[in-house]
Image (cartoon, rainbow over all chains, first blue to last red; front, side, top):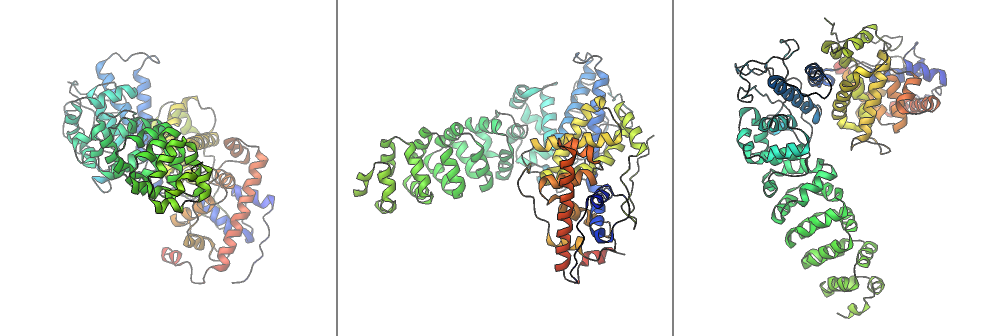
Length: 401
Length: 216
C-alpha cells in the first residue's frame, strides 16, 4: 500500500464533515463514509423497545384522562383497577429496560374470552435478571380472567378499543402485577413488601401468567423473595429461604442491587442462609457484593458467618478484593473476623496479603488481639513474617514461639 | 393517521444525506404533546436509534436500559417541552445523558472497549474514492470506532453526526462552551482519520471479505 500523507483536517473541512454538508474532500472521503455509516438508517434491532415505549405513553395519557384533577382520588372502582394495571404495565416494562417484551394483546376484560397471545415482538434478553431461563427468546403471557376478580363487566380503555394495552412480559413487570393482585393500588416500598409477604402470594404465583417467574426460580415459594430482589426492596418476605433461589439468579439479582437494599437484605439473613447465599454466588458476584457493602454492614455480614463459611468466602476471593474487603472493615469487625477464622484460612489470608497491608491491618487492632491472632499461626508461617512487621507491632516476643 | 414510514437515508456519492429537520417531525411533536400515540411513535422511530448509538459510547451494553429510562422521562415531561424537532432531539439527548451519568456503568473517564480489528479493517479498507457500503455492519463498526475515542471527543462527534445537532445545540447538551465542543469534535475527527489511515496501511489486500459477500 502506498504511504499516504493526508492533509490535516482543517476547521472548515471538519465542520463540513460534522454537518454532512457538501461533497467530500477526496482525502477525507473514507472518514466521511464512516460518519455516514454512523448516521445510517435505523435497524429493526434498534426499535425493539418501541411497543413498550408507546404503551407507556398511552398509559401516561390514560391516567391523565381518568384523573380529573391532579392528585384527586379516582372514584370509580373499575377505573381505579384499570389505572393500577395500566400503571403497573407501563412502569414495569421500563424497569428493566428493553429486555424481552412479549407484546401479547388482550383487552382488559373480565369475561376472559380466550384471546390467544400474539407472539412476542423483537426480544433480547441480555440483562442478568431475565425470564430467558424459561424460554430462549420470548415469553408470551396470556391475559387471565382470574386476575381481575372484582371486575364483573368488560372494562375497555378510554383510548381506541382496537389498541389494547399489553400485559407486562418482563420479570419486574410480572412482579409488580403479582403484588397488585394481592392488594390493589399497592405502591411504595412498604406496600410492596407487605404484598409480597402475603400468604396468598405463592398461590397467586401459580397462575399461568406468572409461569415464567416460577420457572426462573424453580418453585412458586421462591417467587416472593425473587420479586423483592428484583424490585430492590430492602426487606425480604422470606429471608431464611433466600438460599433456595438458583445460584445464577442469586448472583445476578444481588450483584445488581444498590447499596441500600443490598445491605438490608444481607444483614437480615440468618447465619446459615447467609452462608449458603454467599457461597452460592459466582466469584464475580461475590466480589461485587462484598465490595459494595459499607464497613459496618460488611462486618455484620462476615461475623454472622459460621467459621467454615467465612474461611471459604475469604480464601476464595482474589487478592485485590480480599485486601479491599479487609481494609474496609472497622477494627472490631476485623478483629472478630481474624479471630474466628480457622487456622488454615487464617494462614491463607495472612500469607496472601502484601506485608504493608498486613502491617496496617494488624496495627489497627489492640495489641492483645493482634498477639492472639498471630500466636495461632504455625511456627513455619510466623517465622516467615518479616521481623520488621513483628517489631513494628511491638510483638518481637513472638519470634521465639 | 400519521404516516409511519421508515426513512431509508440513501447514500449519495457526493456526500451524506443530511439529517433533516423534518417538517413532519415538528408536526408530530405537537400532536404527541397533545397525547397522540401514533405521533409519539413517529418521534420514537426517528429519535431512538440515534439515542441508542449515542448511549453506546456512554454506557456500552446498557444503552437499551438507559434509553428506556430516558423515554419514560420524555413521556412524563413532553407536555412541558417547548421547541421544534431539532430542539426535541437535543432535549432527549440531554435527558439520555443525565440518565447515563446516573447509571452504574457510566464510563466517565474509563477507557472504552477497543474496536475489533476486523471492524476497523472493514471501515478502513479500499481507497478514498470508493463509498463504504452503508450496511448494518458498517454502522455498528462506525459507532464502535467513534465510541473508542476519548469520551468528550466521542460525545461531541456523536451529538453532531448522529443526533444531528448543530454546534450550539451539542454544547447545550454537554453543558460546555461551543468552542470547547468544537475543538473536541475536530480532535475526534483527526483521531478517527489517523486510525483509519493506520488501519488502511496495515490491512492485508484481501480485506474485507465481509464487504464482498454483502455486495450483491
